[in-house]
Length: 361
Image (tube, rainbow, N blue to C red; front, side, top):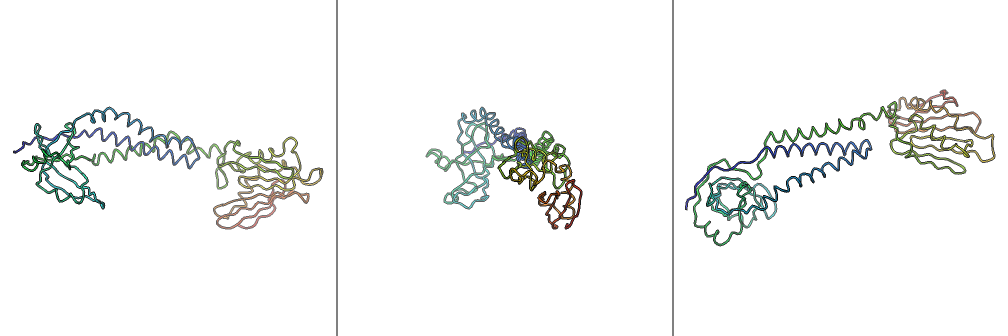
């Protein structure tokens, strides 16, 4: 029996292009939001980066649910096909992916040519040869979904052995038909658009940190609410530890930290004060000794950032700094030490913040 040939149906490319564009946009936006949120410590950006792909996946599932239900309800059609060509395209296991080009000849429809990719067991691979007739199944509305039936019924197996199938004219439809250059460009454009959208919508969080935190520099950090600080006061010492992103060099931060240790019943004199980037330690004078030490509230708060900057000049990229204030001998002395890639800088100043000497760097 000889089968007739006809014109093969075609794909709906615009839907694939639109899906590629949307997928690229979601990938770009979600990755940018998540990475940026982690870098600038913004919880809402990081959460947005996680929610975007989840919401997109859910919407895609719901949107395609009716179509997939309709496709599942279609009864597949069985037909004979002749193998025009076959080629193994990879695989190192017992099942090898093979690219088949088939001419399918339905009993009650025009013949068409289709290219499919299907896994074949190594043992069964010799059963398929160019010019051989096989039994296939395909949805009538989506012939590019053609699949070779590995275990056909005895009736179809006998027909495949006794029927001659003519080749159908090309070109062959592909089960995994790519969108081509246009699809790749649209996906890339969508990805870049998603990145730009996140950077534009959240530019205040990403680029205005210096404006919120004051003057920027190697020792400055964006100021955050002091609610993340911890304060501990004992009979001998008082400590303040700042949260992530805060610094004692932020405007007014050192003053607030010392006042939190010296307000109310804690207005005692101090023997020493040690300040680092995110911590403050005050050693109080013994109770009942009124003449020892100094009032920590008298420190030249506003001059401390400038002293740290001067001490760090010439040390390369700064790694850390410390300010030690000593008033045991009566006169107040401020000693600033800054370490960096190029060495260590040391500066001493009086109780008014005037530089007395500087070394290192």
